[in-house]
Image 1 (cartoon, helix red, strand yellow):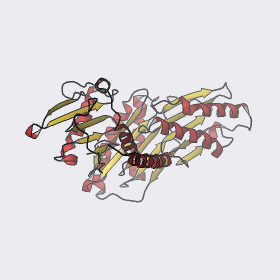
Image 2 (cartoon, helix red, strand yellow):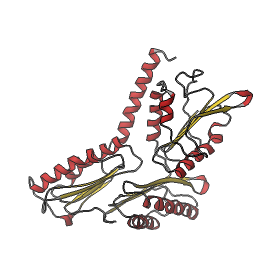
Image 3 (cartoon, one colour):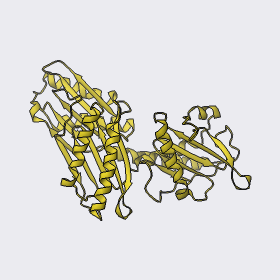
Image 4 (cartoon, helix red, strand yellow):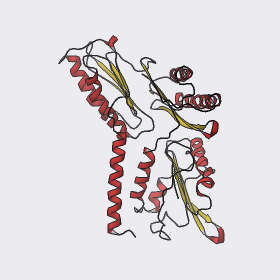
Length: 377
């Protein structure tokens, strides 16, 4: 059992890490912003300016967990339209914070212009005096890359092309709330390439596919063989990097330390499990290991996944067990979409059969199978 002093130290560490995470997700500057001159200008204290301020102030709270919101305010000719889009892998608080910063800074950087667009790392804001809903646009656009070149350029580009083709298809086939996909692949010399593609979900599947195809088509011209590339347009966001984002992993580890001591009745735990069929049940269970040592297991998917996606996620997690845990008698794999855990004690009942040993966080020895995985043993 933890002493009072150790709990104070853990609380102090948690506050430090929370502050680090907060600083990490803050948005001091736009990556890029534009004034859209063809939208025209407005006068200070005009009806259009008041409508713009009213509309922008409503955007953070109007955005839901899917990270997309479009709205309008006022009457013609002073009606204002706005669209916000957050990156599909950020949480709602980060999304709303990013949008809030955008709504404050973008008008300051683009005074008197009726239309403007700005990109942060986590969100995009665009406003105009014309409706933008359901309209595919690839201008204005923005490109960013680093100066590091990939080895074996032809093989790198081939692996990249295959990755982006899959992401484009997955993102474009998304629903009316989110068109987003992220994954990784292995390139030459065991380099791992991480990719992300996203459309505003008001686009049709065809328009999203065309827009992402256009963005991918810019890579040979601007980024050929570059390891860290970003293409952003009004409607799409396509990101390529060899560096995985770790902020989510930090948050998961903090959350687990807080929740570790909290016990829940068995029926509450089981009520949250999603049944995924006979091949991959999410209910907890146990079996016997060597010398009749009990082994308890639990698998779980987020309930928004299809049965196929849930099985695929859990299969990927299961296949990582030998690599990361070897012969360890306990382990846990957390991803944004599914979780896997096995222990040598009953961790599901109200009172554990044995006191759980301390959890030690270990870094992944290789890139995670899904962005945002935490490996604990």
